[in-house]
Length: 309
Length: 260
Image (cartoon, rainbow over all chains, first blue to last red; front, top):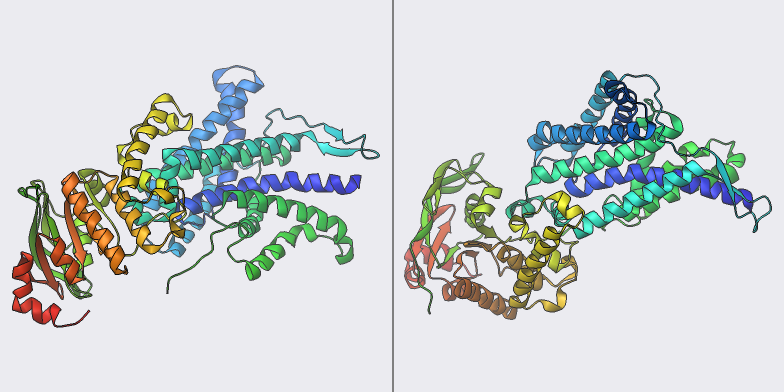
């Protein structure tokens, strides 16, 4: 039982991180109907910026304080991601207003390769580390209830908490502010939104900036676990099944989808893996997503697609 | 009626619009006077919606100009149009389906909002106050259109006739000087048509809003409008008060000859 719970918690933590990346997809898809292939590259780009600014800023300013360096590096990385959003809107999205979705999809594929290359050119292509001071030591919980208790990584716990707070903030922003309302309006119908004077361009910059910040948080958490390196941009591939499962248009869907995939992956690896010779973790998510596509193509929480004929 | 028809507020001059080889509009000119209800009618495919889309800035005509309040434009752009005080509704509803009635109409107040993103994010005093002010305005519109019970209902779940009212409400929320209505009564039953006619007359009467309306239900149009433009195959074939248009032989053969 203790081992099962440990696996379950492990899955939940990983799932939370998948959710965070999936959230970036959902935000942009909701607001612009674009499936943003560059989300993974944005995670890499943001994490690289953070890691390098953390090294550079103390050197430039000549101080030695880890907390201050982290805060400044994070702020600088946020600024970088906002600039990226602005440039993408200016140079790509603006030219492609009202184009086919497939055109926009291809454009984000291009953005993805560009960001990967440009990021490594700008910030270097070695493995860097991000250390935001999250405790690495494990804790043992539920010792009284179960023999031996359940071992949980403190770092994972913090990461999950950060992700949860971020999600809550985003939900509030979307539901309760005038800008959030404008974002939802644009997501629903570009043309109608334009006709009542909502500036599409500004909305897109805001959405891509928010997605950039979400990518940054995901990058910082993943980066502090695994180090910042090129493979970070591949983590985003794991978010694809998550959004299929949760529904491309649903923020809660991204969260729950992430958790299901995270848990499913770990549990299947442990309990079904041995029967199939292991390695299930790698493909489990995709098979699950495929199954979902057959049964419920809009995902768990996505809007049902009904076309008037 | 107490309202007084004023000077020309909107003038369309020699507008031509083509999509590739297809001529949607050929050399169309007409004007709209302040506070009047001006109808554009014509059979399906006559170019009515294209005309509206030119005024609204969705389409950019190849020729001609549009003058609004004495300012001439080669072509319009959607956002600029919204800022100048022209609001529109859509033939095929373009509401934000997942959002509630209140939220939909609130989006119409978007241009009136002055606080910035960061103030909103932390719900700073000014943004809270602003939200409340705008909400009061939106509630007035909801009362006016008699959709109080649906305030919080997602628009996509409402009956079609009521969705049309929300569409009108969102446009009204912009405090428009000119309201462009694209087939406000399409697909409605008689009762819904009567309601909608009443709302249109009330808007015109109470707020003095100039209304440009596209419709192909002749009966409704003749009762509502002060003047009527008739289009057929992208050309203007009639223009004048309803009685004159009704007796115009070109109009009769092109339009009234076919039953609808």
